[in-house]
Image (tube, one colour):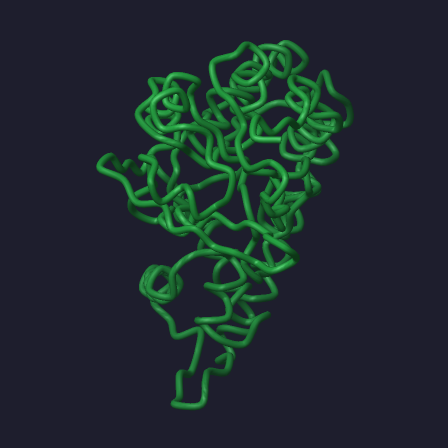
Length: 312
């Protein structure tokens, strides 16, 4: 049976600490309705009013002040109990829920999991692969791997490695359409493109003669899943702007060719491990993040193929 009491305490504490339901939602990376419903459910279960709500915000009731003090002690005790119990690697136990983008999760995270689980035999792990951005609280995620630029929030994060996307095509496609020498020449070539929440990745950024240039990728084939687009690119269906962790090995073995390397803009994002602010000292979470940081300290794909432009 699911027990949400600790979750309710965390949400209530966030509302008080941030001063508003919207701010608490932003802080925890969840929706404002989720915060409101959780506090309402807590008050119903306790059969008491914890917050006086007004048009200007809210303030704690007497019962709310008492419950907040209890909630803080409970949350602190839970975290301390885990920290005291799990004092070394061999004692890291429990269940870990991790979320990762599909392509990166399949290509780079999953192959690391046998070594991590062998190191921690008392730990079980649920790896959720999705290209949607999951709510850490709502979806009960301990660690989320995120790629790109992180929105402003109070969620904590650790940088795993840089993220660079490059423009590639299959050799057969370049034989048919020629090698583009400028971003403008991409207009005559078929592409593959993202659909849904990742459509912003269809804006490919270049720098030509010192000026920024953006090419908008359109395609007869769109997908909300990166591995699907990657497979279509490998099949020679279209040009793709793709993360290096997939591109470099395919370039090294000749399945893909990088184009427009001399004018591809440098990405301003990275690959991060994201987690709730009060969870970074939980041993199973801390050990997993430390493991990822070490694993990606020198990304193996950066040595897979040199940066080369076939048009140069």
